[in-house]
Amino acid sequence: MRFDVVSIFPEYLAPLDLSLIGKARTEGLLELAVHDLRSYTADRHRTVDDTPYGGGAGMVMKPEPWAQALTDIAVASPVAEGAKPTLIVPSPAGEVFNQQLAYQLAEEQHLVFACGRYEGIDERVLEWAADQYTVRPVSLGDYVLNGGEVAVLAMVEAIGRLIPGVVGNPESLIEESHSDGLLEYPVYTKPSSWRERDVPDVLLSGNHGKIAKFRKELQLRRTAERRPDLIDALDVSNVSKAEKNVLWELGYAVVDGKAVRRGDA
Ligand code: 6GU
Image 1 (cartoon, protein in one colour):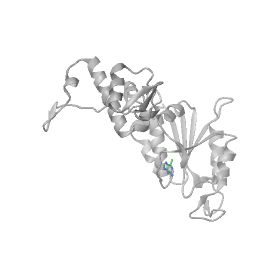
Image 2 (cartoon, rainbow, N blue to C red):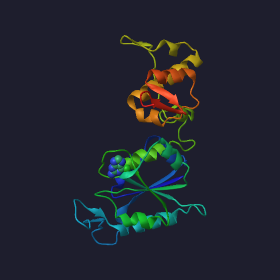
Image 3 (tube, rainbow, N blue to C red):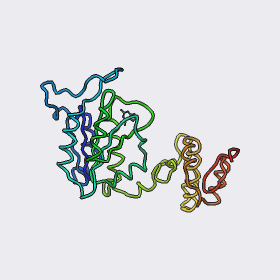
């Protein structure tokens, strides 16, 4: 898999040399290059922005440097016949990034990230790029960052760790938060008693059936409390009797494979 990132602050992406993603690059599990948008300008001042048509605050990124960069990058790394590379445009106005999208993007051959700054990139770039790329504006969530770079760090890490071999123990991918639509259960390590707080007994019992049941119940409780939106989205058509009881206790009834808040039903 190949990643290209275009930014006016290429140094901002330096953390991608480190840790799991850095190691995966060294080992050849993924290729990643960062490009300075200014190297695709043609004027003496290497201008990347200008004032917005129609007025308003801030500056807009000029289209031509983006066209030069995106053409160069697509030509340099051709994908299979009939396929297109994906152009991710980080933007608070995009679809929301989540684990499901991370899994989907981890299947791609070539991802290109276009980091906007200022008020964003001239909209015509996104229309024009659709000939060469599958264009996807993507947001991390409902808040505003100064530019796409921090979002790209998050997305490359979330996607990169799903590439086979990048995470040492693939079991840890299966058990983590969001992989089953629920938040992860709480974890504990030694000592079993610490500052008058004891690890739940069942975790010391060695009874793996009981432990799995206990953890699933805590996942449901935690998710209902912190992220009720995830409970609403859950497919509970194959839920066990015990889990149904937990959901009931948390205020949900199971109706047509969905957990619905009792009283709303
Ligand atoms: Cl992807 N970009 C920017 N600039 N702000 C954001 C974001 C992305 N996601 C949330 N806020």
